[in-house]
Structure formats: C-alpha cells, structure tokens
Length: 98
Image 1 (spheres, rainbow, N blue to C red):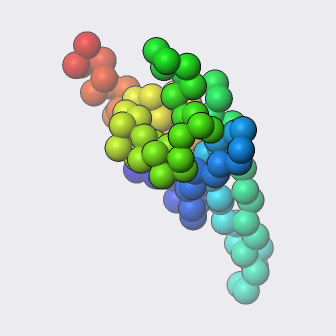
Image 2 (image 1 turned 120 degrees about the horizontal axis):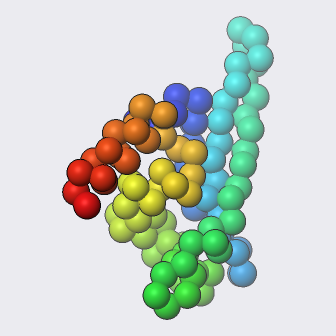
C-alpha cells in the first residue's frame, strides 16, 4: 500500500538526469494544504548495461520501466513509497520465493 501522505508520484527528466518525484500533502488547517516535493536522482540504480533509468531514453520509457518492470522488492529498497506493513509483506514474499 502506498503511504497515505503521498499525493503524487512522477518520473521527471531533464537532458542529463532522471528523478523520482514524490509529492506529499500536509494539512496546515481547515483550508490550507502544503505540498512537499522531493526528487530522488535515480542514477544510483544500475543494470547490466549502465543506468537502469537512463536520461538517453524517453521519459515514457523510464516511466514504463518504473511502473511495469521495476519490481516491488526493488522499490522497497530504493524509495519510501510504501507503508511499513507493505514493505514487510513484500520482503517476506520475496524471501519465501528465494
């Protein structure tokens, strides 16, 4: 389960970087909501052929990789998207399979 304080997750890309952008909302009072935007550079994630999320690929390809190819066990260890309970469940399932 995605953390409840997260309102949006996006892949953001420039000419030489790919980021995972996580937006969290915080209610200030009855009518004000602040957004906290955090971008994590995905260059630390690599595969056999270099950067897994390459700035040379289109943003569509990188977003597709994150949503469809990047497994939940890897997401648990490289992001803070999931609740603690979801992280435990994903890690337990991974251990059972291996």
